[in-house]
Image (cartoon, rainbow, N blue to C red; front, top):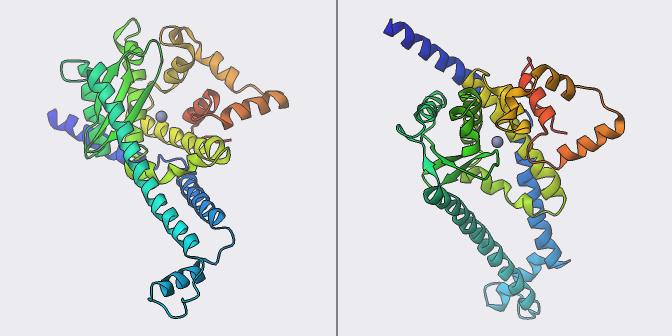
Length: 321
Ligand SMILES: [Zn+2]
């Protein structure tokens, strides 16, 4: 009997691992590359803008000649400008180091918040969640089991995943954990949200090597901050939802969507049929446009798009625009 359950578990593990490999939104990697490229182009543009129409190579030759390292540099005149460019390059490297240090400081600040104000999920505290984290980690072959913390956030329904050197941690707002331990006893929805967060870790969305490369795009006004980065962010949310579906087998997915809109008590009184009818209703062109703009500027896909993606029997990638 024990062998039978062991085999069932191993088979499920193999199926989940197979499904999980295909969970990334089809545009995510392309958008990631576009964000990196846009950041690099913006950086080059700044350098060229600062150097105006200067012949950098000729100026460098002149400078080398000035120091006796290259012939023909005796009439050197542009040293100050080249030195300014060199100062710019050094400044650029210093800014990257500063960005790195600032990023690591910010993630440690978030981790310190957990150590200061949260309850760590353990075998004794919220054991159901603790064992689920271990199960999901095993299914995903995560090299490190994430630490999970519960913190009350004055009614805010949210959860997030973050990286600090050597570990991944997840904050589940207590308002989410309440779903499982208060009147609704709804573990499925909590596990779906947990699986979504672990999906971000599995797809490396929070690890330094991923975030650092696409960070500069945020410094491009309007195009970077309001268009490209939110687009990438929305594709990542769809990817993490797909991981959650694979891990949980789809239980809790629709209730998670309804809970995010109706709140942690009232969502149990929402009619799924009516909710689905409303989000798939045909809208007038102006209404459609207004909704399109809301989605365009959002870091997460709007709920109708996200719900439709989750319930899509073909499991196609969700709508980004
Ligand atoms: Zn997410």
